[in-house]
Amino acid sequence: MPTKVLRKKSVVTDPVEPAVTPPPKSSETSFLTKPKLSPKSRRRDMPEGLWTKCRKCEALIFDKELDDNLKVCPKCGYHFPIGSRERIHSLVETCSFEEMDTHMEAVDLLKFTGAASYEAKLAANRKKSPMLRDAVVTGIGRIGPHRVALGVMDFSFLGGSMGSVVGEKLTRLIEAASDRGLPVIIISASGGARMYEGMFSLMQMAKTCAALAYHGRARLPYISILTDPTYAGVIASFATVGDLILAEPEAEIGFAGARVIKDTTQADLPEGFQTAEFLEKHGLIDAIVPRKEMKERLIGYLDFMTAGRQAG
Image 1 (tube, rainbow, N blue to C red):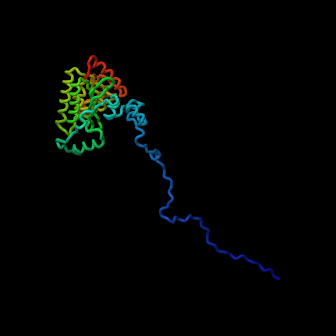
Image 2: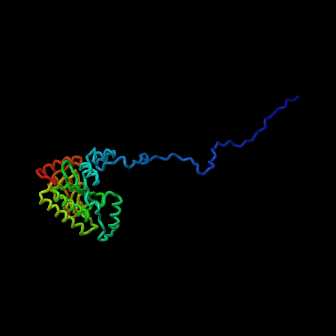
Image 3: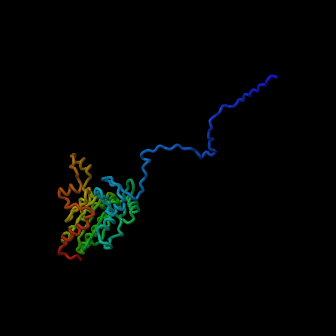
């Protein structure tokens, strides 16, 4: 009997395809590739109010350390700008400062208009610095054992510019010191006379100097301290008629800017022109005193200048 041969049936199948992950059902879900990191994205943003970069040596300084050091860089000695209230606090004895003429504030008499009105500028600056009504704070305080009439200009208010209120407050301070037999100390930080007030601001140059002349006739001392920057109408008036003229290190001091002087004279200016160090070398400034030493040095100067005089 013949043998039956069984043959396998050929099975036709579809070609095998690779497994594919099905697309997401929701259009919100997607697979993102890892972005390439640029050098900038690797740096974390520095939170404000913790660190400050020195403008001179570029060192990072912890803000609390900077405040404790009276806003002086502990690495290179650069003197950061400082407000009038902070400066007064660094000089006078605790709770000894009696502020004068706190009600006085400038008004727009000339209705000056430009990119912004004078009135708008004043409002913006008072909103930015609620503790200031204008660019100077005046009052009577005690530095060591000495009662003094102290005026401190603040560059943060309209560039420390001198208008009618600044001139009037300083004049009243000087006259009060003359009546009470007190020495006067004025700390300047200013861009000059306030252009928004025109001739009224220029008149303050003569008024403050006249008050200081009467103060000098009473043989009472006047110490002028120049800080960065002190320019124009302020440097051309009360700031440079002191019996003793001091300055902070590397403060910029002059009448006009270096670029204006160079363009006018068509001459190259010497290195370090209009710095405190240059002016001390050429006789305008008597001494350069670091901020941390200012109080102690003032006490020494006042000891000498008021020897034998009983203040009232």
